[in-house]
Image (cartoon, rainbow, N blue to C red):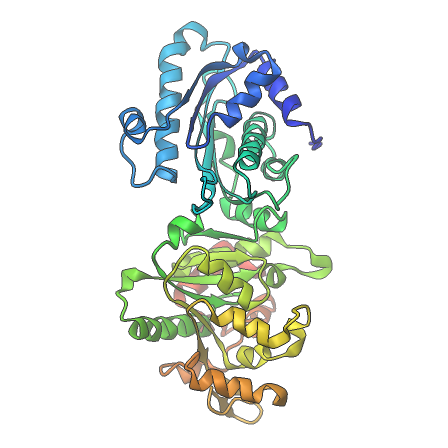
Length: 467
């Protein structure tokens, strides 16, 4: 299917002139920016059954019921539930045989007068692909980056039109639908950090792949999904939580990966005197670690990694942050609590390589300054040199001689901490070795990965497994 970029007005007019589409628009918080686009181009009477905007909190509660916050997914879903239900109840008898009904909703916090609020919003559309069809739904979360309220309203109207148009015209091509969300916009103006597609039209859609596409296409620098594959919105999932992250390829997940995260989690919670529910553990994969030759991404390989991570029960983050300081900055956007990064001693030594900071005016000092400004601590898992049998830990690790004083400073400041508990028997295990054994049909790889991971690989023939 060809992706021809139309103006917002052209998209709105095409929807208005489609006699088979009829529905309602409900918008909270930033005016009726989306429906205004449809009214402005003409022909709206053929498409819009109702538009509503509820600014007062009590009025909003009376219409849609109470919600924990007014700009949240729960509120959006309440809006879609009610508005779609009313359309069916009021209009199906009269025109249900010839009409595919829809309900669009958004709840948004645009820039306030003083510029002190978080500028973001939830948008969604519930729609029938044809008359009498079961409804399908697309929900997105956006961050609005313009510095002026009027520009944010304009961007909101554009992306709302893109969402409605995409739902009606691109639902059979989810990749194209996602790509079209930023038609006539740039990532300097708006960021889409979550897309969730579900319902009859999207039974074939894996939302984990949609999360990957968001980052791959540049709509967002990061996307997150839960162990069961449900897409997550970072600001809601990380809010008021301590966050512990392990970066890796996870190709596949091994005993080392699990032991590292478990050991770090125990020490991290003890350091912060935190209850288990106060902390979220995340396994992160960077785009660099997903890309193969020619920067291409093998979707089958990605799904294999996602499936084994799912088996371990961990939240997954896909990011385009090759530098750790950028990852820390991203996490600090959503939580004001502690941030922990766990890595092997070999990765820690690599962190002190000048080449990763050559693009910064302040070089490596600026990079480490950015990394540790956000309540960040590094938790280091030991590395064993198989040739010399040397166990490298924080105390005996050798970094670039030019950075030795910086390393000593970070150690004494307790920014870098050795993990006290680890399983030495796991240290010779490396994911590439396990992957090669699986693909070469060698025996014994099962003992190098958690039992649930081995079962998943065998049941679903992941990573080229063939018995």
